[in-house]
Length: 378
Ligand code: 5AD
Image (tube, rainbow, N blue to C red; front, top):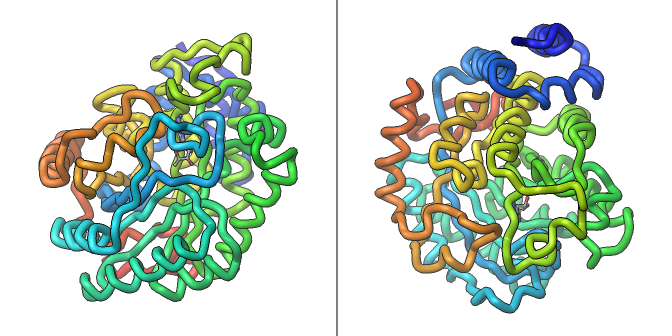
């Protein structure tokens, strides 16, 4: 049975228009069973209307796990001495870019631990220059390398980065401060938000996102995250459920962080899918990723994300040799599966849900195209 108030909120969200109230979004986010099916179906219809039955692929390069930050939840945090550190070479990054290009994926994501030292920022500039040279400038490139100065963002943009993904992690500033004790009080959240402004001012297609189902996070918080996406008017969203990692302070002791929290995979998946669906209803023409964290909780998680309104998948294209070093959370999948195998498997599973891969397409979001960033030329 659908609750009458839920049905009213869904009908309103489906029609678009005014941004809904927090209470309505909380209702939508609380969907289970039949309500969840209706919510996901509505979002999928919007996705079909806006981008068609197409999934954009990005080759994902996890370029290094050295990190200057000490986020309580993350497996590659500075203080975790259990993880062997690595950084790929420029040649290895170029090889991954070539593979992405050969696969016809059209787009590449460079992601890594946050580092602000000049050696690293220069290394990224060099990698961008080289990878474009090697692929005839035919790939669009997204960076996901954390908080940087405006100047660094500008240099990377000039070296050929088109998009930037910087998750806010949560818009609850108190929760953010508790999860990031290394960076001091709430100024830290404001600093991160300022980075989004800088990215926009530097002509990136801008993406953000949050972790879903964090201890200490309410449905109201998630509803406000959704409204933040709208307010920031972003082009892309990358978000996924929180998954504990054993070698982190948060993962070791969830209860002391939030006495009422117990980790349940089913709830994390449900919330993750509901967040994707609500985002699609609120930002119909944005690019929304179906992320690996969903797949970690359910082997079919990424396909479920697509059917709840996501339109982007980012398969790993680096050598399997380094993947164990990039464990942000327990049970991260794909440790041993090589890029060509992943490609075959994804092609089959995407076909099985009646979608096709947008081979050779840059995959700019219709939203970015309307803004004059990016192009719809495939
Ligand atoms: N569970 C889920 N996502 C995580 N991330 C980091 N640690 C975890 C975790 N334990 C996400 C953060 C970060 C991105 C690279 O990975 O949102 O921005």
